[in-house]
Amino acid sequence: QPEISGAFGTLMGWADATRRMRVRANADTPQDARTARAFEVDGIGLCRTEQMFFDEARINVMREMILAETVEERRGALDRLLPMQRGDFVELFEIMAGLQVTIRLLDPPLHEFLPHSRDEMRELAEQMDLPVSHIIHRAEQLQEFNPMLGMRGVRLAVTMPEIYEMQARAIFEAVLEVNSRAEAPVIPEIMIPLVSAAREVELVKARIEAVARDVERETGARLEYRLGVMVETPRAALRAGDLARTASFMSFGTNDLTQMTYGLSRDDAGRFMRDYVNQGVYPEDPFHALDLEGVGELLLIASRRGRKANPDVVLGICGEHAGDPASVRFCELLGFDYVSCSPYRTPIARLAAAQAALLVKAGR
Ligand code: PEP
Ligand code: MG
Image 1 (spheres, rainbow, N blue to C red):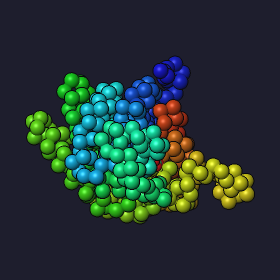
Image 2 (image 1 turned 45 degrees about the vertical axis):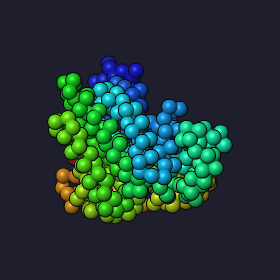
Image 3 (image 1 turned 90 degrees about the vertical axis):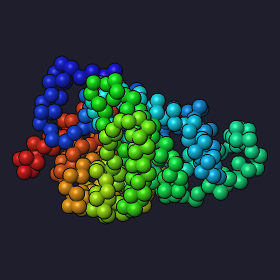
Image 4 (image 1 turned 135 degrees about the vertical axis):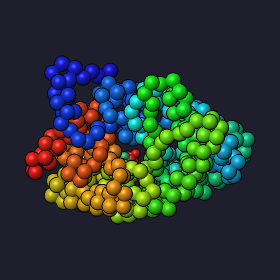
């Protein structure tokens, strides 16, 4: 594990005493969380839960859930995933005791959970006791032309709300388990990805509140949690006022926001980025250096509208840019509350946040 000590530790101490923004880590696994903790982060700002479903024990259950034709079948698969998901969160919460942990609900492009090869289809057919032709047919029905613009994030949850209900239950049960024995309680934050309309948030919020009430009734315990959204579509940025009335925090996913603002695939842009930068079309790769003119203006609009509608709304950023000093400075200028980046970039983010606080205080 990394260690912050000696002169480096002293420098970090000065940065911490100077900075205003919190610095959190993006962490999906216990190993990431331990690294983040060793780097003395202020919490987890983004746990991407879709990463938890790709191992062998889970992927087929996940596929079964996605291919299910009835709610009962879907619930059956989700019931099998629940204990595993609860275990994931218990581990994370134990490591992060006393800190805030933001769990982002499932956000895969749907095709990542569809069976692809013949072998995968055959295996699934056996598991579900269905003919292979049925699996092929169902998978074809769910194929999309543009998965990154299709059934992703909250859209998946509006259509299949049972998925987020399972995850919310796993979070609540895990937090009660961990907090019953931990000295410093974890405060979970549940984050809804890829929203673009307030109604999406209201629909998910009602489901999550119902799960919370069920768990409280079953256990007799009181649950404390916060619900927030990711701002990663231009529409979400423009309608941030509506979102902030329903959400207690807004975290900017600048990877998708950059993709959506430019209409440029984040997975393919590398092929021509060098030509674009060399010919001066883009000053820098906007996926690495935040595009202050375009994406930055959306951040400005969204943060103003969000705060106007709800002065208490917490503002953060969790895209790749959150660990880049120039973006950190921009976030300070906009009055953000935290930045969240990869654990290994958090020391730079802490220094950048301190520098930004000094510069803004000095009016520069
Ligand atoms: C983002 O889009 O900036 C983000 C943090 O989410 P992901 O990278 O998982 O899409
Ligand atoms: Mg995203």
